[in-house]
Length: 421
Image 1 (cartoon, rainbow, N blue to C red):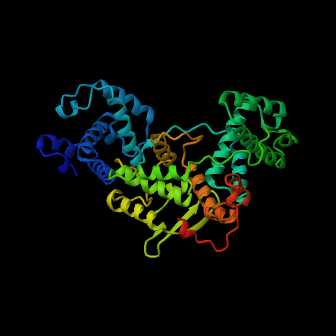
Image 2: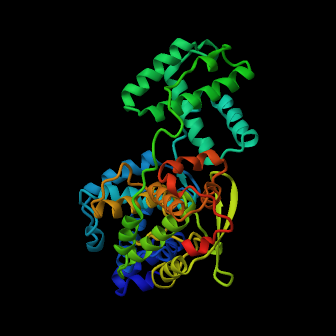
Image 3: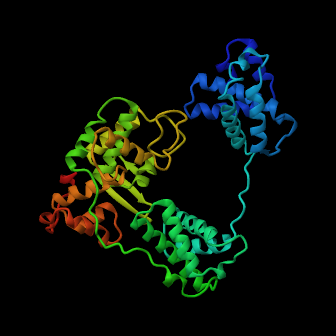
């Protein structure tokens, strides 16, 4: 690897003779496989060499390195003027400290030697663990939903109790005051407040069953009244969806990838997380099928793979997606090539919707899910068929679309979904 990056002996030799050459070479190969270019690898190689010197890694084999120590050495590195011309190019700059931290911490983590600060355990860790197991095993909730709910409850409990106040001393007045204060600070909408109240009521009901708190707290938590189906789906019109798809018909890598993502969202009404987690094996090209694992309902749905969607995804796979050890279909378009992060799919949709100047209440990926449902409704599908297509577990979830076009609410027997798609 070093021989590929440095042609001249005076530049190559320090990397060959420096400490931990095998470890540095292994990490450079790893980053090269992620798509880092030659120039980026050269700079990275200099940072790794500096890391071995500043942190004296050769003298501390296997010893965990605290991030605080890395930060201290990064300050010294940024102020240093190296006698080596090549090292001088990347030291002495304001950005050097940040780059040193980024590269060195990433390498130490890769080797398993970065010692991260251990967060102080929550005073309610045991109770929250039991509550999480209850939600997972008894309620069958998605692990991500359980994690988010427990985080919400933990933050609330830290606010409603003092440092020494146990859970059984909490009363309804304290809970009400904490909710009001949290609403004022967060400027929550009524739906958000109701969801918070429901999550707290769920936890305190569980806590009462375990006799961790006073009885009657769960019944005393009241959220605002939110009427069933009081709002209408906030998706773009289908004509606007066509404009969105037309806006990504170019040959740029981001356009090709985004078109495949948008097609999956608009045609199948998938959730952002379902698109983000699609694996290469979820596409059966021989049988023209798409298998979707629904994280929210813990179920699997098999769709016929339409020609339009299949062509878009296939074009992305053949001409844009880099070779990678990752099995996720959609990766970043810039190195290092990694699976899309949480929120990336929503950002793709939001960026494309704003570019068209559309006026919508919401610009996230769920707006295309609403557009898909309304399109199916206008084409004559029954609410049950739409719910099945979207992966709804309860028919009431789909009933909101009945307000969009009442004339279209006719039951259609043996309707050909393929003709709509």
